[in-house]
Image (cartoon, rainbow, N blue to C red; front, top):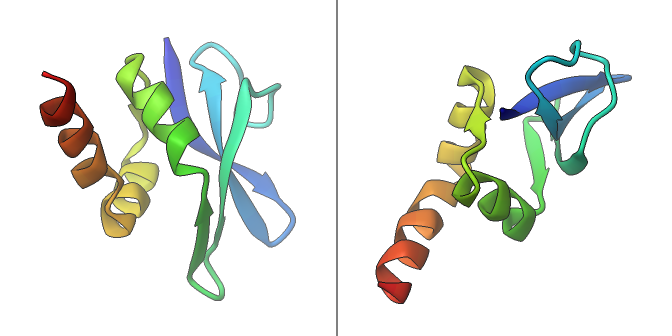
Length: 84
């Protein structure tokens, strides 16, 4: 199973798609964004995030809050209603 979780990278934290069995700093499948908690900035690769969410990836609690604040889940719902 794949999860979207935070991975430390200096002051910033990367949002990565990673296998559940990997450790926190383990090898990731793909980097899908950055989160800077000091400046409260996010940089997201929305198409990649939507791809992993559609394939069944589960975001962790913190990543879920970041994606919700960025409005990614509204795009996910819009994509599902558009194609059905």
